[in-house]
Image (tube, rainbow, N blue to C red; front, side, top):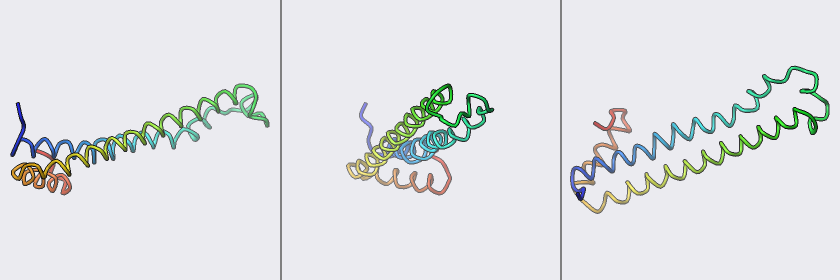
Length: 121
């Protein structure tokens, strides 16, 4: 079933919202916040003894530090990848709207409602 006109405008608005807000703001923000919080979170585990050796390149602290660095890199890379996905969805919605005048009108109306906090209903 081919989507056109009003239905296409609704679909494009949902696609735009997903790329701009759900992925672009919420998901990417959560992933980056998790990556940024790792050092402070891991600091809570250090209680002295072998955890706080002057030379952190050996012992359990070195293993934990290596794991934290790897996890932070994974979260940061994932956030970056999702940001690109969100940008692509917004780009598709913004450019595909011009293929159908009725779709463009509905998309513009719904996008304005989303920006104004009125949702996509």
